[in-house]
Image 1: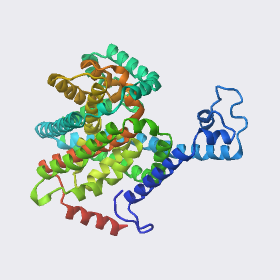
Image 2 (image 1 turned 180 degrees about the vertical axis):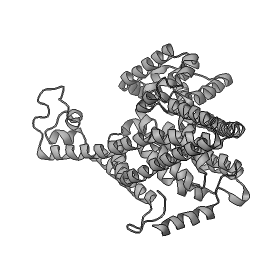
Image 3 (image 1 turned 90 degrees about the horizontal axis):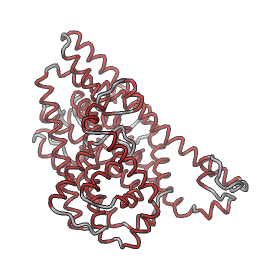
Image 4 (image 1 turned 30 degrees about the vertical axis):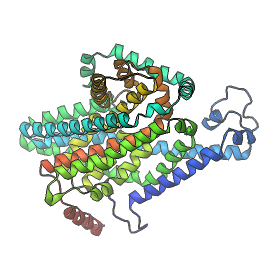
Length: 481
């Protein structure tokens, strides 16, 4: 899978995905505005949610008068959902074996504990620097703009009441998580009692630790057998990526379906009520994506092989567009790894940094935690001290590392940050109301952060190919076809 134009269509993959995204935005916005509850009622449907899902309505006979147009509309909606869900399911299916095979090959391929320690230390160091910078951007933005002051008390109370049930569920989940998980339990839970169960449940943290332990074990085996094992895992990882290439042929259509469905059901009135918060958050994510990462890559790559703005964003376009539409770093991981290789990052560094980054490197999430908690503090009139700001920043990074096996971890674990600085947890209702669109944006940053870290680590390890070398490789591959 590359960004090279194809002989059949003349369009690169990222352009196809971008067209699908643009069409999805247009169709979704039109449907959001034009297709209302009144439209469904005119077609004989009084419970649209039940009608679209195929479930029985709570009100008997509510949808008995549905017309042919209503049934046709439901079919189109369900078909679009099928395409989007199938695409994400296939990517999640391949994500776990990609992580396992790539990480085992990367760790075992080092073949030396000293080199492995240097690679791991450098990777974690880069993750820490980017996370701290992202948190600092969030703190500066909320202190300067103060988005919480732009929402009046009446609007705040209305949104809180509307999403109170969802907020209560998140708080209850957080309390259960806190009661059942001490720090010792969380460390133990990072290791799988049954690696097959970890893979089947998609617990990425346990998959990563299993892969690292297996890779370390292979380094203790004789060089001959270790190299054979590494070649086997590299071949399996390559096979998985070939499958990703096949799945990505569906990407333009799936991105269209996913984006259209999200925007068609988005609550624009709520977004309008908290516009300043939403715009400030998106602006901060843009700063991380378009300023922080390019600046770090420019600073930490050599003059002879500088990672330029255009080179990075062109190669990463498919991964970022997919991350935006899917809101899932894990589902995007196979594509992220392929795009990172297209940047010139070696197989070894890509296979080590990207899977690890998907688990513990989430700059967009860390930034978002700071934005949300500080916004809610301003909204409820809670004055934060310098020490409390530091607490928010530190806990935001921990939450970003989070618990990958916990559904909706970032929102659930936000409860602990709110409690730590005495901000009312009912404010979560406001975050839940606008989280869908912001989740799409921060996932792009999370994915780009893994690729940027890979570039920096590869440059320091002397494993970053030049742009000219990558162009020659792409041309040779195209000629061979």
